[in-house]
Length: 55
Image (cartoon, rainbow, N blue to C red; front, side, top):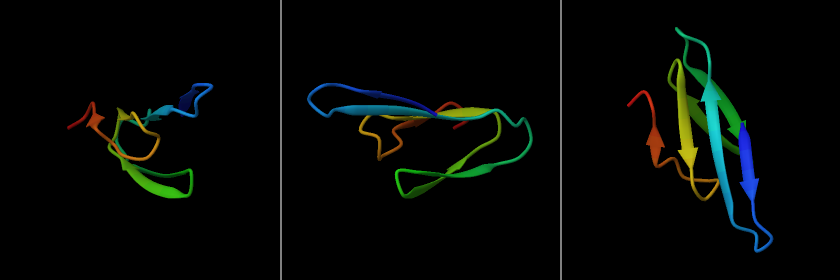
């Protein structure tokens, strides 16, 4: 994952699955996310996925 935070506490994260065939289940900030194969999920608030490159 790549996480970006500001001094005000705003947060954005990018979760990546580089496996070309298998879905990955990851835990990020105590929440579970299913990442499709070969994809990146964008979480502009570090909580909710608003875009995934495989969908």
